[in-house]
Image (tube, rainbow over all chains, first blue to last red; front, top):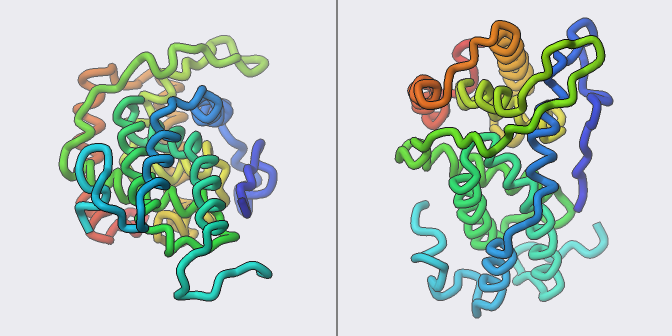
Length: 73
Length: 207
């Protein structure tokens, strides 16, 4: 995991924005995001990755949960 | 640097393992980004699943050592835009998302409801909303956000600025659209802009 730097409380980021402080709801935006990040992860995601991992080759046999993984493009 | 696989070669088993681990680690972030984009938890999770499938299929294109979060956000964002055009996200905002009350900052009488904030966020045009989510919620730098959205850094800055101004005004005036009607308004606004964004003209016609 290379660069998952979070800028938390707006550590750097602000060139030219010096006068424009983040509004008071800015914290709420972080909270919205973090509250989802901190939710317990449903098993479906891990199961999906395990199933993908178990598939023979990288393009797999189209054995996705409901049809082919990459139908479009 | 040291363990980079020779390009063009099959990935080794350990590369695959690393990829899977990193992809797993980033799922909570994908869920958060997706929920911010499309509002409804169930649709957001569908979007994350779709993203995982696409990421998995494209794993040879991931460069080990670079940010998995940024890489997968690009995939998620593109999947979102595609699905939006197919009207998959016509769904209503789910108020279950956040009826939590924000801890009010000192000196402020009225606490802001997270649900209001989220609803207001959902009324923003897609390109501004994603810019604000990436920078203001996800903690990406302007440069990283620009790379994810495929546009100039100045464009991201301007979108974030406009998104912030719009939210501040909505929250200050209490002029947040109500749920059902609000979504119609939001979605038509989003869909209007979407054609531009999807056509690659998203790079700021409106500065």
